[in-house]
Image 1: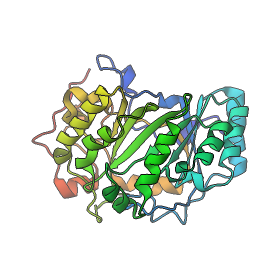
Image 2: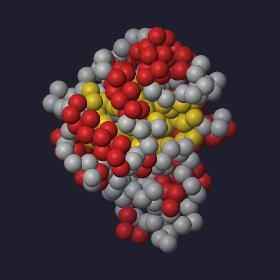
Image 3: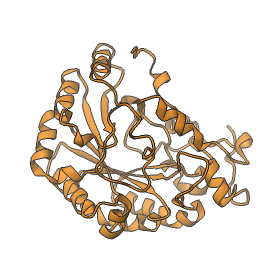
Length: 326
């Protein structure tokens, strides 16, 4: 596989907010153009109700070791990215994770990040093993602000306590950075302000991300999509609290115009992603970019609405407001 043209392996959802004239710089602490993600695992020991790939997990194929080595060799030669993200359904289940991190460091990556639900991080020895191997960034999923709701979403009792324990253990390391991500659904959108407060003591937590759920289909058959209008006041409270605690912020899949003065938190760009192409076949069923004002709106990061959302909540033509074009 050739890596000279990463655009064929990635999706750029929108323009980079930081280069749009007259628009505030993104509230994110990270430049996604400097990162590349490699999907190395398709097994998980949680059963999250909002999982995007639950119907395809058994069919999707991880990147091979040869593909992974080719990526590392490409970057050692061209220095295209400074950060590597090791991801998958649950990357900590793979026994070779520490060695992959060591390989990435030997090939010149300045940062190695894992995306994880964080349960195995509750083992202090495992945290230390990963950090010693070179993992310095941890992107950890937290589904809600309390154990009852989080565990109901993951469908694994005790998962909340293990995830929080992992974040607390990582907080002991000066050179570690943590990021949390919450998939915002009808089950948890009211939890957002409380979640920010629940995690406020974490010193290594530099950024909180809120990704609004969408189904990988044309309909919300599981009734998990939250109304943007219902979620907005809770999201605004969470944004204000996170800013007060000095956190970076990213919000994804939410109408930019509804955020008002907080629209700098919307950042739908993603790092270059190497993944089984079959994933994109399912992903494109969502039908993003539907908005009655799309032709006249100058929003830099907005994905509009998707098919399932419009079918459930309508097009919100009475509340969406197009940004002026430059």
